[in-house]
Length: 182
Image (cartoon, rainbow, N blue to C red; front, side, top):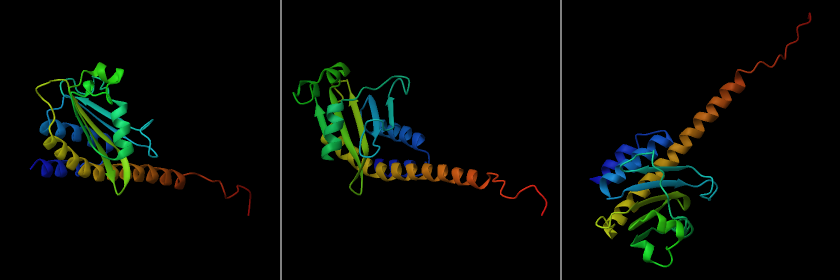
């Protein structure tokens, strides 16, 4: 039922920002995450790409730190990562990650037809709210649905901009007809 709700809700949204916000809200309903971020790629790189982050309690006002190590690994390998007590695992124990005090981290790739669109990143600092493999499977399935919706939203926004550009080109006065007598 969660997959049906997510699919129905996000496929009805055309704009990218409203889509990403609604997606994180829906993820918070099904996963005990405190913070979430969606990092999108531009030309297969996360650097400089759109980022949308949300804190369950504070909303968009609170910045969300993500582990670049985990994000880069998921983006590179195209495989989801679930890390419980990640700060104690040597491959994730970076200084920036330890500062977030996250007990559980989940990062899922957003892939559409072998094209990496970005990642979904969720974490929690509450030790009792550890993510499970069931959470990971659900978020991975939601990521598959979300990838299509994100690509559609990006394409829709591109089409709107292209339409505006073409309309502006049509409305330009070229002064091709002179003002002198025939």
